[in-house]
Amino acid sequence: MFFKIAYWIVYICLWPIYRFRFVGRENIVSGPAIICGNHTANIDSVLVVLALGDRKQYAAMAKKELFQIPVLKWFLKAFGAYPVSRGENDLSAIKYSLKALKNKEKLIIFPEGTRVKPGMKSEPKAGSAMLALKAGVPIIPVYITPGRKAFRGCTVTFGEPYYPVVDGKPSSEEYRIVTDEIMRRVHAIPEKKALNS
Image: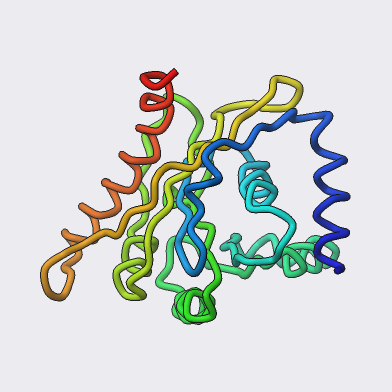
């Protein structure tokens, strides 16, 4: 009940500012999955959470520095976020992620690891690929309107889920290939949408 109340408070407060739309929610499968998207603004993770609905069914990575702010730490935990050390092999975050997937939750991960503004080159991390292959769960790509969103309107579009596959034990190169495929599918969403419109 607390989550539902908090969800709708955030929804009502943010909608007049962002005028968000959610497309392709029929692609959100039941059960565990990893939701991977592009990341260009701080609000992106909140928009994905709102797109998933008012039933708590996910966990989300957030940089550990945010958890050093007491009020924000409480808010993040209330909405299912857990800390991760960027640029490191954070074993505790990996264990938490696998546990969440085992509990049939969805993980929200931005493979690029930080905000990447339009025109910037990104270097997505292989964590989402590793988790998906290890847990045997599907990837759901999601594309969020890039750049500044306030008072301009924005759309969160979910693509079709798919299972990444490799033969045998994955190598670091295969993790990289799967990661590149994830981001390719994310960025293909607006192109596919344009073709179908």
